[in-house]
Image (tube, rainbow, N blue to C red; front, side, top):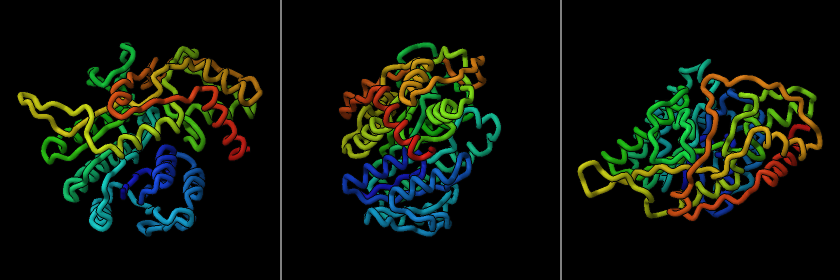
Length: 345
């Protein structure tokens, strides 16, 4: 298959590209390499895939020195003309859209970035899929669409009408936009609501690197809601395995029935996570064990935009695609710490 991966210099995108290439696919990766977090980490990920520092040049395809079937282009999804041209030239079989302005708390400070990337950019992806007659669009949604629901586990059949952050609102908007294009143009779209993903090469604004850095440097860890938070921590290899199963599938899964009709449209939404919530304090304790050092903890109240607990019902993804996450937190944190010590220390 020839597959476009947007956000390919990002955490999940980097791992997905590697897996797709190892499976023998042809891959084009695009990313704008923005400075939301350290760009050197993004360039280091690209280097692992054989992409040189020349990748910092805009709109100039960079061929991988490691994988003959991979090239990378620095590009904004908002650049509609360049994006349409890319689709016209490459004739992709499938698209995996992981590019987005990430982060819940950052959306309180810089809301316009979320509208530009997550709404306008996604609109351009949908339009490009429409006119290029793309067979399948897989895109990243988020567990944040569930808001502060106290019903567990969280299921795709639950109402998601009360997002509590702009980031969550943009992800809910993506799902609605995808539904519209599936209905109007018969484009197969599959949204994946990611739960808390961790592992080697992760984002520095996420808990694992924040915790590991703090413990290593005797800095207090900010433990929000006094540690009474639970997250469905999911190791990156399990997440990638789920994504590729969806990309490779030829038959849509839990399609959305059309109101007032026996027919369905090729639109699906799935949770993708571990299915087992882990207490934040237990996660920190596992990190302490892996690093061989105790953490200094600064217990703080709940933060605006945060949710108390996330826990995914992943039965639909298991039933339709054979998804089966099997990486324990102990093993996942162990692999993360090995990478952390190599990269940062």
